[in-house]
Amino acid sequence: MFKHLKSGTVLVIFLLAGCNVASNEMQALNEDFEKDYQQLQVENLEALPNIEVIDGITYVDDILIVNKEISLPEDYSPGLQPEVIEAYQQMFQDGAAEGLDFVLVSDFRTYDYQAQLYQNYIARDGQEAADQYSAKPGHSEHQTGLAIDVGSSDSLTNLKWEFGDTPEFQWMKDVAHEYGFIIRYLEGKEDITGYMYEPWHLRYVGEEAPAIYESGLTLEEYLGID
Ligand SMILES: [Zn+2]
Image (cartoon, rainbow, N blue to C red; front, top):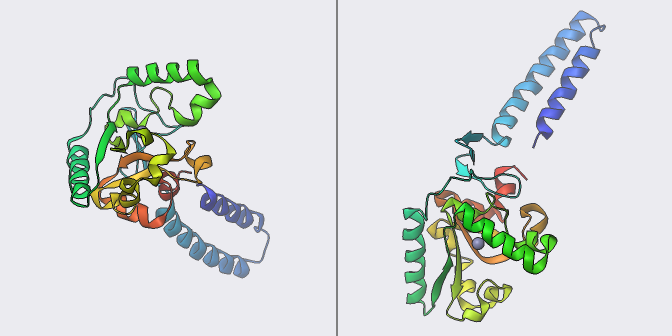
């Protein structure tokens, strides 16, 4: 994310190293540099994400971010957010009109509940395996109140890759953004998100969702924090 800053630094060093050139050349160099530098500043404004941490919660361009590196405070416990409830209910209802049968598999989780889940998964599969699919406490998107896991009436596919083959997912993958959701852990992006592909895990981002969907990027890539 600092690649533009780095090239700016190189320019400054170049300028300092050029101190012994004749003054008219120096001025031309200065003017060039100023032009480049102004251009750089414009690029930086466009390229660099605006990161704010408020009460221990991290926002990038006003979007709350939780991932393997960025966590939430232990006492952050907002419950499932009203706009998320409204969005998924509308999506399920519109899906039903298409003959689909969605179920809500999981929604908000507290820090303590996530801690318990994570410990159970470690006991069952070992830490390395557990880290591929379960978040450490404080690092689960379910603690934000902005994430849900959805399933179909074919409950055998719940929380399994097979959910990706259900008619529910085949419809949802192309419309979820219209309700403000993105599929957070995309196939083939495991090295960026840190999680295996999870077709069932939706993250509510609101009005930014269509642009993220169109980009085909993970949330981290889209916000420039990958
Ligand atoms: Zn989930």
